[in-house]
Amino acid sequence: MDGNIRLEVVTPERQVVNEEAQIVMAPGSEGEFGVLIGHTPFMTSLKTGILRYRDSSGTERLIFVSGGFAEALPNKVTVLAESAERRRDIDVERARSALERAQKLLAAAKEREIDYVRARAALERALHRIRLVESRSRG
Image (tube, rainbow, N blue to C red; front, top):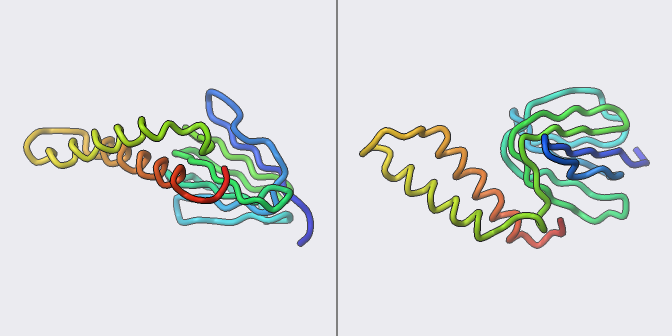
């Protein structure tokens, strides 16, 4: 189908994206999904990962998202994320430090009681942020 779809990505702190897109691909809890103009309405939870979209000029854009929900309508995709960052907003050194801390916590898991789920989630967030910054696509 021809035409663009409106994409809105919002966190509790701010609006990250509000623009027209040719296609939106996001990390749904049941797997990655794609939305074009005229899509059947649905709602899903999101997992930590990279939301990709092609803006109205055809340039691929990438956004780190962590948690939340996505609603697809025939002419709009709304993402309500716990956190979301464009590549230019990611502090890669901070992400690398978070990765190191999470790796150390997970390595020591057998020796002391830690919140394994939180440490694993921190590791996953850091890895996705680093991958996004180091990818070649524009964000």
